[in-house]
Picture 1 (cartoon, rainbow, N blue to C red):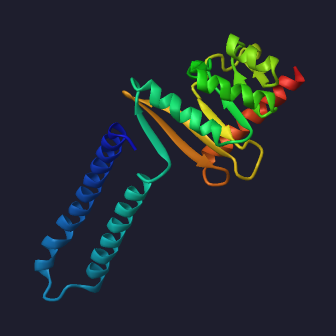
Picture 2: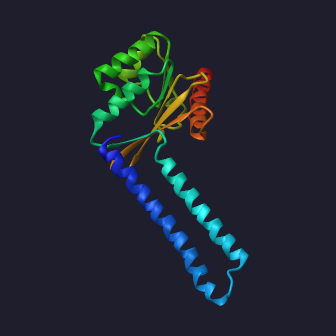
Picture 3: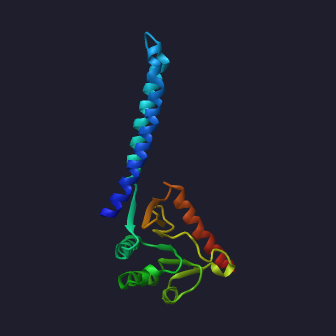
Length: 213
């Protein structure tokens, strides 16, 4: 993970942990002053303290674990790193399904050559709102291109994702999105997160609509 990614991820973690600590402190602020009213600490109060402490520890563990999810964070200005990520992601997947707005990230020679290899092997599916020069050239050598913009829907989709090993048990999806000055890419595996199934269903639906039209 690069320095920009570390700064963003750990910054968010610090904010969340501070919020959790503040919540736990507020619980203690209610319980501790009440202890003066009792000669012996009531069982229910001990149970409350122990339970809240366990919840606090669990939430902290979950927050830390969330930072270890397959996630890449790049500065929007670092276009080379984003393109290198996409190249490596596609390279290590057999059949690839790409849902994109205009394939602008594929203008790098190494990426375009990789996509051509996928297309020639019948292992490339492109889902776009309209046909462009890049998609046309790839279609001519074997890529399956789905143009869903003809139905006057999703002309400029907000979704950007690429599924590798499409149609197999080992399918995975990389979903890109913008967050301020950062470009965030999350990775999800088949069966592990609803985001994967949403992406997979979207590609299937677009392909079915295209075949009927």
